[in-house]
Length: 183
Image 1 (cartoon, one colour):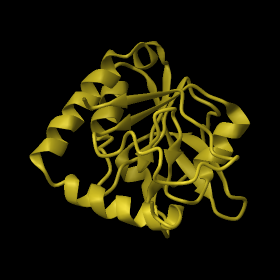
Image 2 (cartoon, helix red, strand yellow; image 1 turned 30 degrees about the vertical axis):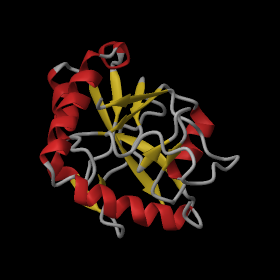
Image 3 (tube, rainbow, N blue to C red; image 1 turned 120 degrees about the vertical axis):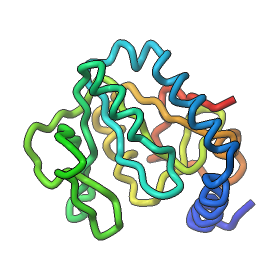
């Protein structure tokens, strides 16, 4: 077991970066999209919140595009490092996004916010069997989920699930309602 969350997070990012370049990862991504789009949670949601993916993460562009094509409102997280808080801002277009100091794409404005949307697709690096996730370390999602208790789904490839013994679950960690897996 890694010494701590920080160490495991680094290991998992490297592992997922390598995996993301494989044909298996591409096939699993297609399976995840199909399962999400077939889920009642996605079908019943009028508003969906999702990050704009980067690097090794599951590409969220197909999710954003499908939601928009179905006339669902799409919201993208915007973080505030001073207050360590997050809100969701209506997605207007990719050209409206700005890159934060951490390299994450976020809305440049704070107009048309929604807290919470009908469904939040929560990102993560790894997941336990009972819905806990290892995030990226800033705690934005856990604080948000603790405050609003929205309906949540995470999408996990085969390299991200069943990792219960790999890191310590803390009292402030909030599990997601459902994990959709590739297999």
